[in-house]
Each structure stands twice: as structure tokens, then as C-alpha cells.
Length: 415
Image (cartoon, rainbow, N blue to C red; front, top):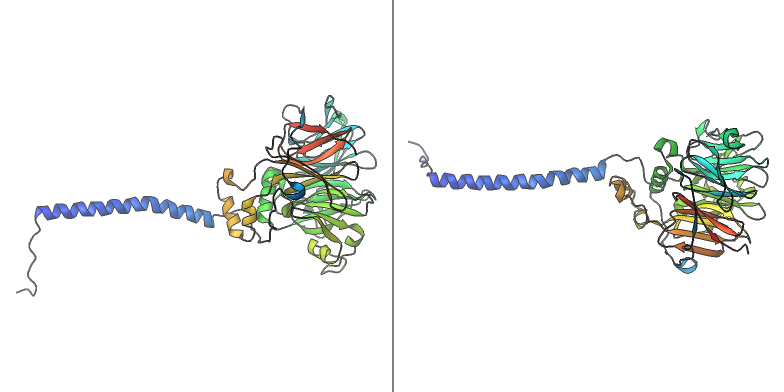
């Protein structure tokens, strides 16, 4: 006989109860799975999906906000507007020369207009994104085009002739492309100075300057550089490397020092050009100095630090004023994640609408060669968006902008 007695057959009521319990458990499992699986997938996406940046940890200075010389005000709100033509927007930089204003626009046009805005004409269309402008000694227009490199324009309209002066630089690396030409300035000795904002994210490759600049600021790998080009031989060299999105250029009144916006670090640098040429690198005098080497050897100093926003262009005005525009306020997210590279990668995996791009806020600052703030003009509502700097001409202050569909201006005394 069996060691264990055979179990009795279950009744129909017990079978039904067991089946109901099993169904309930199965339902709960399916319910949990319906929630758990997407959560796991979302977490995996946020943590591991590839992004185009390789963030670098850095120490962001504590944001003092709108205080002291930059206390909140509304001095920029009474702007008047000069309408631009159909399809024209983004007067990112304004050059005043010979009674005319010149500005590069987002559709590739370089516009010339009088200070009343009554006469407007297109000098040339570069087919790219013209940013910084200057005139050389022969009256030829120089254009730093983010997608094309450094251009030189002779004539205008149907008679305009465009030459590419610098699309690659062979020092120290042969045929290294200029990926984001940003500002151009003719030095006191005729040297053409150009900022190449980033070697990591080309404006042409990414289809625009916005994407390239956001990625570079988030990554903070500081691959920007300052390039010097001989105006006669057109030979170019990298004069300074290791910059965090270098932007606007201006010179001190005596021409011996250069002022340079470093957008990615919220500051403005002062470079002693004579000392910069003598900075020793690991390769002696034959290498390209980095910013840290230049600072250690006294060739570079910080003129203005810890600004409440991202400094862009630099333009010299009357009475010793130098104007800089802050395109946006600082991002609390970018500051908070400065030491946490992974978190910055995660932000790029979010929908574009959730990227840490601050709100529009108009802000212009005038300072002197020693960094003393002379004027601070703000529009907290950002009615005139992404102010990049200002240009003084004919008793007016013309405001530069990344995306505005007009040219903003206000009366401003020359003294």
C-alpha cells in the first residue's frame, strides 16, 4: 500500500475559488508589468542612450544674480524698432562704418542701412550665418561666418565679390577646419583676429549656431581658440587654445591688450598681446599656448568675472565705453550640474522643450578698460530677445540680437 494516502478530489467550489485567486494574481502581475516595463525602459534611455556630448566637470562660480552693479532695472525697455525685410532676422552684430550700419542676419544676408533705417540694402548673401563684422584698411568688409569661415567682401549687391580668407588653419594641425567662426577684429597692426568658438560642434554640421552653442556650453570641454592671420600673406596661426566658447573681441584704447568674451565661463578676459607671443608651452615657444598657461605666465587675466549671464559680442563706444550683451541669464540647471557630467548628458535625452535654455532677458553692460561697470541696461521681460551687444552711432545705441525681427535702438548720449 502507498506510504502516503491518495488525496481526495477537490470539490468544484474549491476549484472555482482557486481559479479566481489565480486570475487576480495574474491581473496584478500584468498591471505591475504594464507600469514597470516602461519605467525601466525610460530609466535605461535617460541613463544610457548616446548623446553627442562628453561633459567635463568644472567649478561654476556661485551665481550672485542681479545684484550690485547689475541690480534689476528696466533701462532697456524703451527701445524703438527699425523693421527688417521679409525673411530677415537676427542682427547678431552691428558694425558702424562711414555713416552706415552693417549687420549679418540669420538668412545669410549682410545688411547695410543708414542710422534712421530708411535706406536698406543687402551687401551680400553669404549662404551661411554671418556673425562678427569689421572693415580692413582698404575698406573691404570682413565677415566671420559661422558656417563658412572668415570671408572678405568687396563691393555690394550685384557687384559684390566674396573671398574665403580662412576656412582651415594649418597650425598646429594641418588643414584643421574652422568650425564656428564667431568674431573678427582687425588689430592695431592690421592682424586679422578671429574666434573659433568650438572645435567640437560645427555650426555647418549641426545645421545652425543654436544647436552648436548649446552642445558646447553643456559639454564644457573648452576647445575654442583665438586665431591670428596675416592680412598680406594670409598665413594663420592659433594664438591661444583651451577657451570655453570664445566670442567677442575688442582692444584697449592703447591697442596693446585684447578683451575677449569667454561665454562658457561667464567672464571677460584681458590678453597682453606682447606677453602672449612669449608664452612657453610644453613644446617651448613653438607650441600653441592654452589659456591656463597664458594665465600662469601673466599673459592673460580675468577682467570681469561671474557675470549673471552669457557674454557675447564686444563693441567699443564713446567715452571709453565697451559694450557687451548677455544673451541669456545663467541656467540654474547648468550651474548645478557643473560638477556632475552625467546629469548634463541626461538633460539632452529630454525633449528639446525641456533643455536648460533660460528665458529671454535683455541685458547690456558698458565697462571701461579696467573692468569698471559704467552702465547697466536691462529688460527683464526680454521683449527684444537675446541681446548680444550694442553699437553707438549718430547719438543712438543700436542693440544687437540673435533672433529679433527688427533692429532695436534708443537715444544715448555720447558722453
